Image (cartoon, rainbow, N blue to C red; front, top):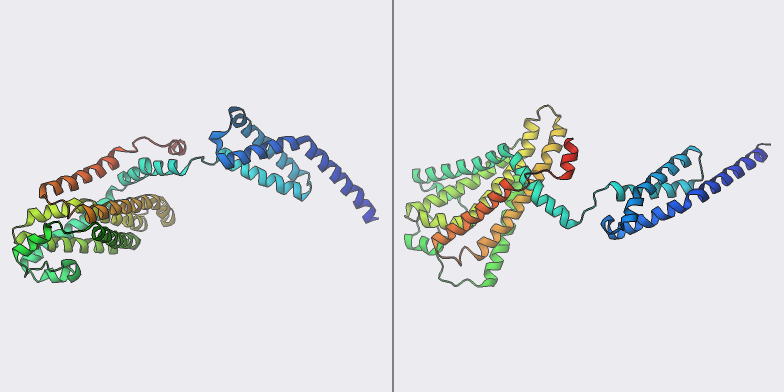
Length: 349
C-alpha cells in the first residue's frame, strides 16, 4: 500500500518539476550565458542591453530558487540554481575591477589615508630613531669606545675612531671605480638586509610596541655613533650629504615599519571601546598599508644607495636628491587620497 501511494506522489513531483523548469529555463540559460561572458570579459564589456538585463534575470533566478526550495523539487535542479545564483551574485554585486584599478586605489587612497590616520604610531617610530641617534652621538663624545658597542665591524668597514681623516673622507667620495655589476649586487644585498630589518620591526610591534621601539632605537644608536665619528673628524657635513641621498628614504622606511608594528601594539595596549580583537582588525588594515609603504620605500632606497650614492660625488647634489625624494614621498602621502572612494562613501552612510 505504501509503495503504491508513493509512486503517484513521486510522479506528481516529477511532472511539477518539469513544468516549473520548462516555464523558466529560457531565462536561466540567458542568465548563465551573460554570467559566463561577464566572468570571461568583465561586466564593462557587456552590451548596454545585456547589462540592463543582468540584474533582472538575477532576481528572477533568485525567485525561482526560493520557489524550488519551497516545493522541494529535484536536487539536481536545486544545485544548478544555487550555483547559478551564486555566480550571478558575484557578477552583479562583487567589485568589478582589474588589478591595475586595485593597485591604483591602494596607492592613491588607502596608503596615504592610512599614513594620515597613524600619526601617533609614526611619532613612536620616528621618536625611537631620533632618540637613539641623539644617545649614540652623545655617548661617542663621552667615550669613543661606545662606537664599537653600537656599530658592527662589518658595517664599519674600517671607519673607526682610530681611522685617519683622509681615510674617512675616501669612504665618502669615490674616484669612479665601481662597476655596474658590483653596484647592482650591492643594491640587491641592501634591499634584502633592509627588508629583513623592516619586517622584524613590524612583526615585533604586536608585543605592545616595545621590542620594535627598541630595535628602531638601536638603529638610531648606530646612526648617531656613526655620525659622531665623522663629525669628530670635521666631516659631518659631508657625511650628512652621503647619508641623505638614500637615508631620507631608507631610515624613514624603517620608522614607517616601526609605526606599522606600533599600530598593532596600540590596538592591544589601548583598544578603546572595542575588544582587542576588533581593535586589531581595525588597526591591522592601516598597519598592512604602512608595511607595504615601507617595502616600497626600501626598494627605492636600495636603488638609490646601490646606484647613485657612490656615482654622485657632490655633497650638495646628494642633499638635493635625498631631500627632494623625501619631499616627493611627503607630498604624495599628505596630498593624495583626500576624497573618499565610492566604497568608503557607501560605508560611511
